[in-house]
Image (cartoon, rainbow, N blue to C red):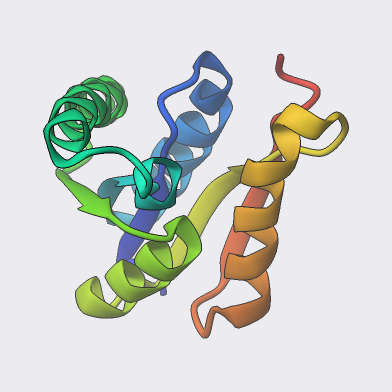
Length: 144
């Protein structure tokens, strides 16, 4: 049933619990995992073009580090992994990528609590509300 798992990551240490969950399910089901990092381009819409290029390059570097870190942990567990970086609204990109790869499961972290955590929480909420693919969330608030 879960042959292809999508794991969106933001690269934070608290994502370790979500990576482990994806690894456990993938190992149990013989699934492969797609690790996705989304650059939220709304964060730099008002920047000048030259500055946008610099910011985008830095964020792409962060995305590569985040996906590489998760992929390394999954590969250590013997899981086949694909990584990707997309740019746009995080929820929209997660849902579009899930459809593109025909994901059987999306496993992602969610945060609740203070203002700084509301953005990721809202991404999870949007994905859960709009996804036609089952979504498994792990509360990261207790992990931090």
